Each structure stands twice: as structure tokens, then as C-alpha cells.
Image 1: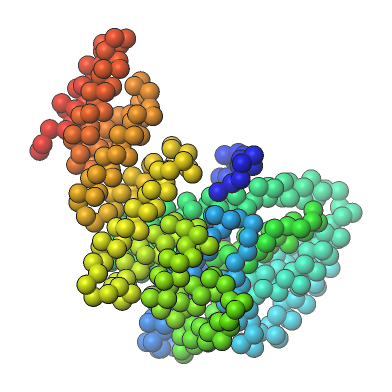
Image 2: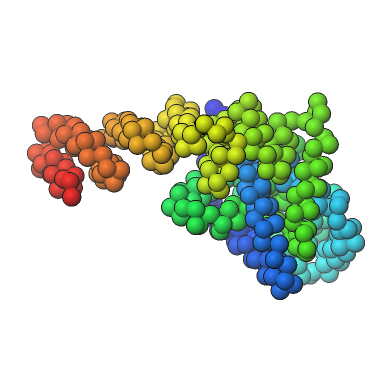
Length: 432
């Protein structure tokens, strides 16, 4: 969350424009993954689907950790995607391709002359190099690009606009990340087990390279490139390549488990190896390192919906009860003073509704809905939405209490509104 004195101020137009770019990048990622799978299917390798599922599950865990980690501490770096990319570059013969693409980018830079096709290809080269973690290549190309454009007064304004757009980029990134997680989680609840495959794949389309704070005014463009690529490099899936990547990356991480290994490294290793016990143990012990209850809740939920949570718990431990406990921990955070009530309570309501144990669910929902209503003016139209949601959650007693409270508050000033307030219960909450 943002520190005091550093509130985020983003215009609707800026946020809308960024969201459009975000969706475009996700769509590109989806197409690349589908193309790779289609290519593998044509080559008749049936094991590809299984390998891809394993990779999706592993990276989904990793990405949730990364998302929550960024949300809690936006300027600190984490090595999830970057570590995988470094391994990929080091263990696959990419040197020739990287050299060719880098040379092509330099040629395009020298001969673009305002041609839109050449300009687009240049940025595609830069994007590829950034995804391959070739930060030195990217920095050199961008520096040369700025030098080439420095004498072109027409682009000065455009360059400044781009730079201005990312002044508060880290917090916009965090907010959009969290929004996607909440949206994904809600969709997952609605879709159930049958819809998990596509949802996990969608989650895997989101990744963030390792980034840190910008240390100088001139480094903003490098941070933009390294932080805002939302698609995976094409893994050129062949044979057991996906499985090999997971196994080798896990082995690489395993050899590094010494005094210098961070809790994040342990979590990444646990995700890649499918070691659910290690994952939950580390998250429980070092939860604050990854965003506390927020991270643990989403990781546990992912494991729950993929049928993996029972692997980590003793036979006598109730899976639903364990999951409910993690949901409640996060609900307590959402309803604490750490978040504005308007945001925290609305999110908490959704999480409470997902609880398995009925009495717990009803108790938490009742408290959240009543406290939400208390914060509203009796004349606030949104109060009717709270009443309706109470009925949707099968809590007519809560709807009745809110209606009567509104009736009492309005009866001295607006008889008609008071009658309507009482009527909403009589009309909508009777048993059917």
C-alpha cells in the first residue's frame, strides 16, 4: 500500500489508456501460448498438454506471490520471472537469435526514417530483448533511440508525455495487478472446477520481470521497458521441453538453497517442484515477506481449486476448514483500518461469501453488511444495493435490520422515503 503522503492521483483517461494497453498485451500473450500449443499438437506430442498444465500451475503460484509482493512493497524487487528467463537464456542456445535480433534493431534504428512498419518492428525487437532479460542490449538501444530523436523537435512532446505517464507507474501497476487477481478469483469461483484450465492459463499470461526503483531521471525509459512487458517469450515447445524447463529450473534453485537464499527463492522452488508442504510452511512462517494474509489466501485458494491442498495437510485435517481460516485472515485485513472501508468491506464481502462453513459465512457476511450500511447516509441510493445483496446472500434478517434503521432515520424528515424503505423489505425479503 502507498505510504502516507504519497496518494495515487491518476486520471480516468490515463487509467483507461493503460488498461487498454494491458489488455492488448494479455491478448498477445494468449495468442503466443495458443500458437505454441497448436504447433505442438500438429507434431503429435500428447505429453505436451500434461507438461503445459504443470507449468501453468507452477507459474500461477509464482505469479500470485509476485502480484501480492508488488502490492505490498512496490519498489522492492523479486526474482520470479527474471530467474526463469535467466535460466531459459542460459540453458537454451539463444545467443545467435539474440545477436541477430539486436543487430536487426540497430539497423532499423539507423534506417527507420519515420516509416511506421520499421518503427513497429524496432519496438518488437526491443520487447523480445527485454523479455530475454537482455537489459544491456535494451539500455543501449533506447539510449541510441533517444539520441536519434533528440534533434527531432516533433517527438520531444511525445517523449515527455510518455515519461509523465509513468511518474506514478509503480502504484498503477500494483492496483491493476490486484484488480486482476480479484477479477480472476471471482471468475474462478463462478466457473468452478470445470473452468479452471482456462483461468489458470489466463493467470499465467501475467508476469513481471525483476525491477527495482528508478535511480536516476534518465533511467525512466529502461524501467518502463523492463517493468511493462506482460507476455512470456515463446518457449518453442518441443517434446518434453516444458517439463524439462520446470525440472531444470527447480534443480537450479535447489542448488542455491544456502544462507543467502531468500524466502522468495524458497517459495519459487516450492512452486516449481510442486512441493505444497514447503510452500505452505514458508508462507506461514514468512507471510509478511509476501504481503501477509493476502498472498497466503490466494495461494491456498489456488491449491484448493486445483485439488492440491489436501496433499499438504494431515489426513485428519479438514481442507475446507483450513481454507476458511485463510479466508478469514484476509477478511480481517480487508476490514481493518489498513484499507478504506469503501474498498475493503466490498472485497471482504465477496471473500466471506466464499467460505465453506455456513454459520461462519452468515456471521461474517452479517457483520460486514451491517457495518457497510452504518457508514451510509439513509438517503444514499447505494444503501438499496446493500439491502439487495443481503437478500442475495439469504440474510433477510440483515435486510430487515437495515430497512428499519433507515425507516427510523427518515421518519421525521421524509415520510415517503421512510415508507419506501420499509416497503423494500416487505416486497423483497419474504420467503419464496
